[in-house]
Length: 340
Image (cartoon, rainbow, N blue to C red):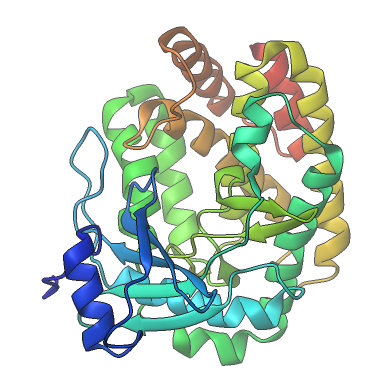
């Protein structure tokens, strides 16, 4: 599965590696700091004397969650490919700049985003929901999906080996939950079967507020290791489930979050324009919202800010909606928030 021997979270190992690979000078000793929060990767900040700052990522074979969850570390190279492509598909500065990758040790280096910057998830949980961020969030996703559709013939060969959506999303989010919740199993199994057949455009697979930094009023997208050619409806479901889960958690702001999610969808539709895979797209996206809402309280990777009562409530509402699923995004928003 992997031949890596380096652990970039060990400072002495990382320093020797950077010198050996000539990424830094033989006598250079940069400042190195482990970054928190990595579930699927080791992540280290490197600050050089010349003023350059990098973030290094190294994918893990066993992810850092409470239940067993495994995925091939080769996925870091899909992230590297996505990073290179996204610089062409998105506005300037929307993703970090690529620096280098190592196929033996499964390491990716990218330019660090300068301080001060904020993480959008943390801003929202602290009461910092701003509609302009929601607007930009949807527009960025619509731009990625549209531009990648237009260049699919070029993109597809580079992502032919990027099959990690199965181990990082379909299995831990949908198959795992279907195996544990009988009432949800028919819905989730049908959703998996449908999703596996679709190869419409570049699908990010991890499009969420936690992967958005806000720097100088600009959104910067991180974490592309799940990127693949697939069904962009998953990106809608995954991201919208994050916003609706926060609407659930922050009850006093629920109406504001609901309004922001409606704005989110409206701006996505405007950004995507006419694409040949649009027929049936909204209904599929609505089903992915329900799948992800349930997965984030009952799957292998659960929301860290929802308490036990909130998880039980979201589980109840999600299962109920799966019995007669809404076919529109506005319908999902209305029925989920009302059901809470």
